Picture 1 (cartoon, rainbow, N blue to C red):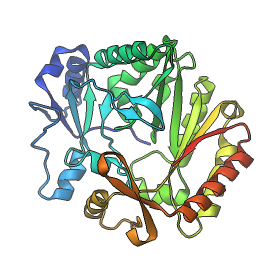
Picture 2 (tube, one colour):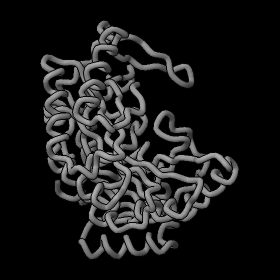
Picture 3 (tube, one colour):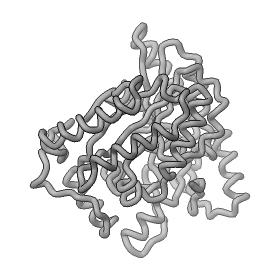
Picture 4 (cartoon, rainbow, N blue to C red):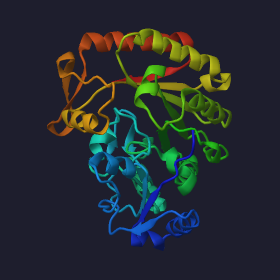
Length: 341
């Protein structure tokens, strides 16, 4: 998978007061990329595109360098206790992604130059919850590996948590450029996870991501670097032939994954879901998508803030869960399934 290279770059003026901001400015200048200033990373104008879809696709190629100002960490259940984002947004084009909704009209990729402030916040949360162990999710609103070659922020976070007796870090990626993280001093305190799916789902709904094989090869590197390893199987989809496809996926994973990776292995299972808002956005942005979003075939599940989403009905969800979980147990007898949702 080729590295994400932005075509448009915006800077908040304050970002240039930080070493990382200054470094990135000179780096993108040397790459001869068009650089513009913006008053806020939350409100960027001037991304080209004479139609909404062109503007959206150009936004996915846009990197905004800013200063994070909000440090009230959101809960991140069931993955972790709190979200800890050093970046927001993702250059991939996964049709189903919940960021379609949460990013709304701001689908560009943002990186924050003040990761030290974020880690200071994490320190306060850990102290407040001591002697409990506190876990932080670094990929709730982004794929941090996609921008790591520019920022190095993920490595800083990994090494920070490597020194924390009461803190643990988690993140997930669909990208494979992990070499800069392999010699980080993680001390086993960061669980490095990869998002995987069947060949059908990756082929039809995950453009501009690493292939299955590339992700598994990267997972092998991560395992050899002695990180705790995990896989998120999401979104699990029901379609013609899905049982055979997920069996094939797990068997291929078992064949290609190095033995060291199976000793402390976790799986997280998330079935496909969509909101009414997401459906409208997806149908506009990806009008030829094969993604099935038929409310009549789903169950409405209420969520936070009085809003909900459409998920598979109970009997289908049960069959989906039992099949995937039984195949995990067969292929990876030592693995732990952390949750199904």
